[in-house]
Length: 97
Image (cartoon, rainbow, N blue to C red; front, side, top):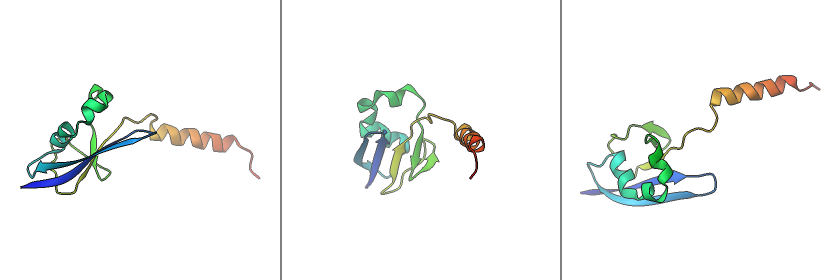
């Protein structure tokens, strides 16, 4: 038996989506390997693989279910805590009306 899953990699200016038919025993790592996105975007292989299923981070050994959407995550450009600190500092320095 097989199941349908999608593997997605999004960049700021475009996204790549691959629909796959995989065995029911497939894992996240299997889906990413079969998607061809590692060859299309070599930068993915330059760092440890980080993935999510519908926005929830998962291990690459996570078993897949039919109709899962595997998202290959990119590293954060700015730490969210640091971003909030900067925004708060800018807000305090502005005069209030």
